[in-house]
Figure 1 (cartoon, rainbow, N blue to C red):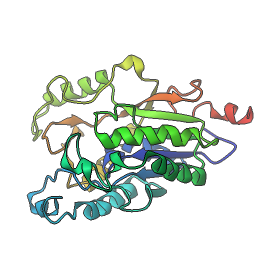
Figure 2 (figure 1 turned 135 degrees about the vertical axis):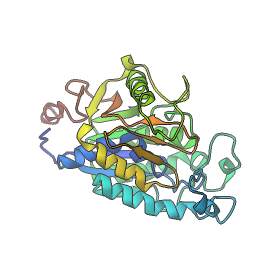
Figure 3 (figure 1 turned 180 degrees about the vertical axis):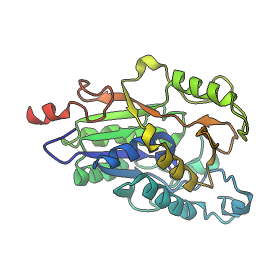
Figure 4 (figure 1 turned 180 degrees about the horizontal axis):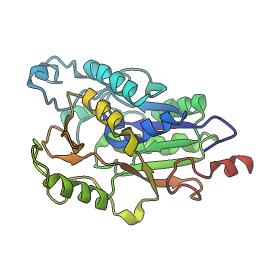
Length: 288
């Protein structure tokens, strides 16, 4: 993975905690290799559902202070993952969590999903021009599970990356149907898991034949678990003495913590990318 320019990775996420839920192992893996890792978060996650009852008054319909609280959680998570560089799109607080489709928050004047897509794209392109990453990671066109902010993040990531010549590859983060099923099957045989197992179709997964890249993150599961624990308003984490681990969001559905994170190559050369986001890019840079 020795590039002529220092290897640089940028990840674009909609809300605080998405970086740890979707790509925490990958972030920690590449940071451990000396890659410069930039995480761009598009909102403060003001509409998140709060798990601890003691923090319930932070919610949007009460004191509306959850966004500021989650900034602190995000900083702790980024430290656990060894993120070099964190940015909020357009500056902290510029764009607001839109909530799920059809929620009243969709109509907030700063709602990210309803914002000016040209302005947002330029804000992200400016970050990419400054950072000059060879690899950018975002969401697929469905945003993983249909959240309006994830879909908008996908739209601006694709457009901004196309406008920055230093970007050689764009990936979408996904979860493997088979790997998740295997992880859930293992959890079913473990005592003490405090949440229910998922029913078919409850978790956002893709068929394995569309996955182009699998990054081994087994050595970085502890860092990912630390990052997930940092997002205590949104995520519960469970681990036993034998190393079995899972997490749950406010829906109380157990999700396995896996040793591999999966991606779909959206643009750029495929050769060498099977197990490494940067694989084969040396030859691409020399040919330019």
